[in-house]
Amino acid sequence: MCDVTASKAPRSWREMYERIAAQIQRETGADVAAWNLRIRDWGPRDPADLRAWLNEQGVTGYPAMLLGFETFGYPDYLKASADELVEGQYRDKPAIRPIYDRLMAELPNVGEVEVQIRKTYVALIGPRRTFASIQPTTKTRIDIGLRFDDSADASGLQPAKSIGQSSMTHKLSLSSPEGVSHETVGWLRRAYEANL
Image (cartoon, rainbow, N blue to C red):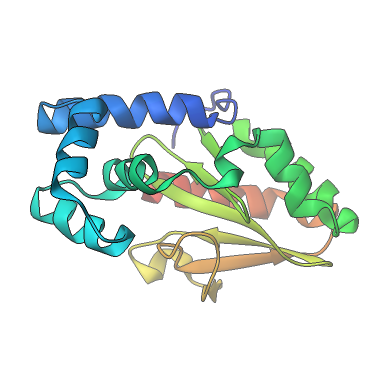
């Protein structure tokens, strides 16, 4: 079992940019500006063309995403603060916002969790990778996506179909703040530990 530590505050896009830019430099030996010049000289037709070319260069994942934004423009949601993104997710779903707030309050009982707010969901990231996501699926329900590589670890949970990131394999559905129980926090902790 992991030690209970305070969760990290949601990461801003600027912090994510700096982390990904450092990853690009570390993994490729060139900084974002140098990659921007290479991309401009190469001249991709569209984002798919650029992704294919970057893949050939060994640049994938977040570094490829960032270089795509650098080339074709940043989406508006990246310019929003974490609070603005959460407000947008729950603007027309005020009845379930207390569920989200209660889940956030319980994260220190899960482990050292990095919170990344996306446009339509919240990703929960442990030391190694994303282990859960929180998505306001309807006006009366929040789905928690959980990642278990071994489905035996998730016995009793529903399979996940489309929650947050595609890596989520199982889900819990909550319709009230009281649903954020000891059992719910236990499932989050199990998913956290399964992804260490």
